[in-house]
Amino acid sequence: QVQLVESGGGLVQPGGSLRLSCTASRNIFRIGWYRQGPGEERELVASITSYGSTDYADSVKGRFTISRDNAKNTVYLQMDGLKPEDTAVYYCKGSGFSGHYWGQGTQVTVSS
Image 1 (tube, rainbow, N blue to C red):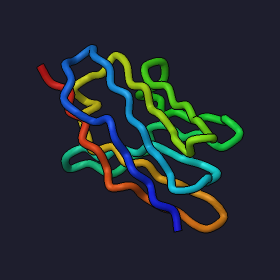
Image 2 (cartoon, rainbow, N blue to C red):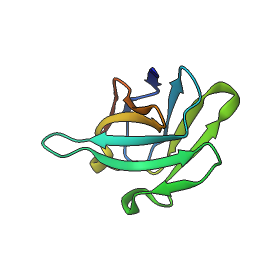
Image 3 (tube, helix red, strand yellow):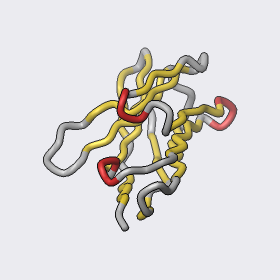
């Protein structure tokens, strides 16, 4: 079993920045950030493996950066140039040989 704890959400104006953190209770191969807006399906935003291989949704390429500190079992999502359509609950998901695990989510609201 792996526990994941997200932090860093909040309210920000369009064009602003936020950094989300996801800390796992132990090392796990891949950690991804997903988001779910009102009335929408959950979608992948970005993911990173323990080797540092990354993947991004087209909608966030060039604005969001995912990074990882393996010593702290923590993954960061730096979000710049935020838009109102980025408003959602952001979840981190850990995936490895033992299975898949979700965090509780953190709300990100982009509004003036």
